[in-house]
Length: 285
Image (cartoon, rainbow, N blue to C red; front, side, top):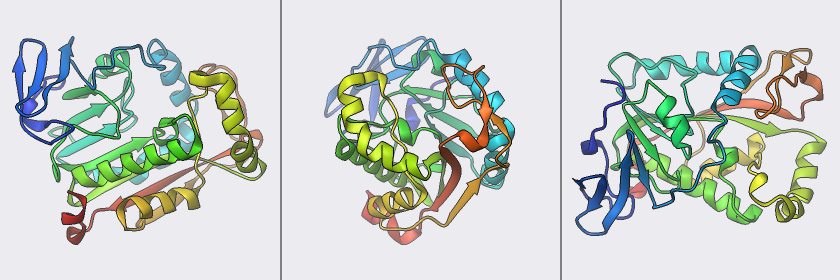
């Protein structure tokens, strides 16, 4: 039933060995304790600090609603055919609800840094609080992996470290996909002058704002290159999603009632689709 946990679907994120349960502790026979379980959420990595998105569930949901016609509707439309073929769905950065509808019999695994969001998401079968750079899932176990606006939150202390985080997430995504499986990425892409401003200003801004600067945006060509560098294989499809310059949007998730016309927003929205080729499977283990 949705919300139930099944450790048979999971492995140790370090060695990919089998897991056992000892009370609320999840153990690997080789690595020892690797996770804890509390209120239906499995927390890997030992990090119990509040995530940045904890207690921001309502704001995120309202922002999604406000931007539905701008980007989400088209992106979900592109995702639909992939959902129909997927018995196992992994959503990285799943948040408190899914903007799409998996097929009724699908097993849905949610990964998010926010325990509050995971608990609020009623469609998940397995709730995992962890970093996406080391996934506790077996190689070749997922039909469809979805990243809805999550890659730009995988930041480090520098742009180089941020790029490394995204590359590792993409490698892990490719690893856990079955041969023939699909990675579906919806993202914001900086355009025009904002791309240059971000490149020049992000590092000094990060030193000042620290954890409060939790985003770095990749252009579509940069995202295509990241996929190629991480997997050795190009995206099968890259689509810009936009409903025009006069569309009213909510650009700030923390202030969803703040709205502006699309043409003043410095980001485009896009979808990238990557399909795992059978011959690539051995290289990604």
